[in-house]
Image (cartoon, rainbow, N blue to C red):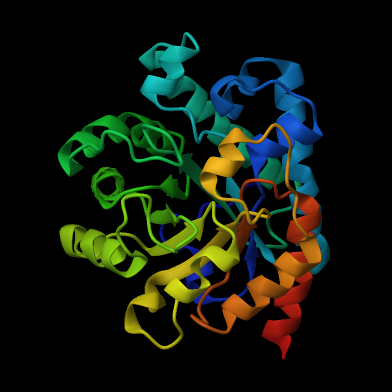
Length: 318
């Protein structure tokens, strides 16, 4: 029997929660699967694809079970919104269905791995309407709310515990997603991406982006995260002791120290150093001490998450 946590997310009460790594880069570079437009959700349409996704998540579940941490299932739906779906031949109804199906798969995995032993949260993953590295032509908050309501509504229908918006490049889109989630009655986490200078691709600072979203939504997000950047890129932008950093609870860093442009142009996978990455996460946990949701992004896989878990569990124990 799977559990639902939408009324009170357990990660808000502390304790270490792991999530997965860079799903698209793992499936493409390590598993040899073709993903047009980085659309992992497209694998849901075949049995082989669903099996590949199941294998992917079970690597991370095994770490959480072994280490006694919580776990957050982030659905493979980063690209499963209307514009991206249309590029792959999906109608709006098809896109709604695949988002619901993805949440159902996460629930199946939750139930299979005895959710009574650990807190396992099911999150509906929302990606940007445009590119995850480049804000491009930005929407207004109202336009963003209208666009993302369709996908978030599917997550609400499927009874996901929460929504997580990954690789947000600008405050406007984050505001729209937050408003859409709040209207659907769903907790929402916003994860911003930064460039090598620790700022959003728009040039805005993390502090200002979080303040803008909070002001526009009445502090709507349950917490914020940082993802798709190496710790070296944003450590200086996350100073210890500043009040706004208390809103940051999660990290999903890149293994690579390359810039977004370098990653975009690279034909290979830069997996970095999993042990070094784990030690950098441990250092980051000393800054905003409430950070407890830990995963990875581009170039990371289960090896990195195992090292992050080991390093951070020992830090929390100390």
